[in-house]
Amino acid sequence: MRRTTADPQALASQVSATPSLPPVERWNPPLNGEMDLRIARDGTWYHEGDRIQRASLVRLFASILRCDPDGQHYLVTPVEKWRIQVDDAPFLAVRLDAVGTGHEQQLIFTTNLDDSISAGPDHPLTVEYRTSSGEPRPYIHVRGRLRALLSRAVFLELVELGEERQADDNSRDYGVWSEGIFFNLGRLDDDR
Image (tube, rainbow, N blue to C red; front, side, top):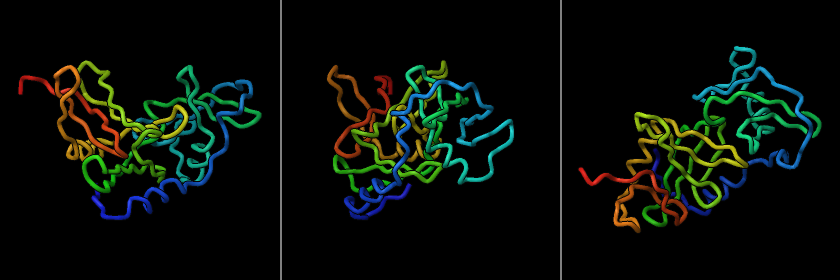
């Protein structure tokens, strides 16, 4: 993680200066079928079992990717719609930059495709505990129904920035601040 003293406004303008994406949420072509394209849990893209080596091709595919209400992921154009396989989340957050501290802190995540996302009202952080082992699955919302899984290293950096807070039911939550919002990373046990 990099803690930077950069001007938050300047940093925020860089985050929002990402190139515009096609309006895939407005396109509704019929389903053409399934494409042998898979995004692995580590953010690597595969076509017919082979890793896609060209970053520009991965970025192109990512620009027309969407997740529909059925939970499935599709590559969508105005005239075609192809279902693809996504092992977990289609993107991986590989870097964390923190600007400021406390309520004024801004947490900026960079994905494996070099997109920058600032955690806040439009890009919430969530942590799921779906496995029997209780292992956390941390995500940041990217766009539409798409999200990025935080790499283990990024999540550990995020946890270092966390603080304890009293919850409404007198339990204790542990979380981080970004853009004035407290994002809960988990409930603390009373048996510490």
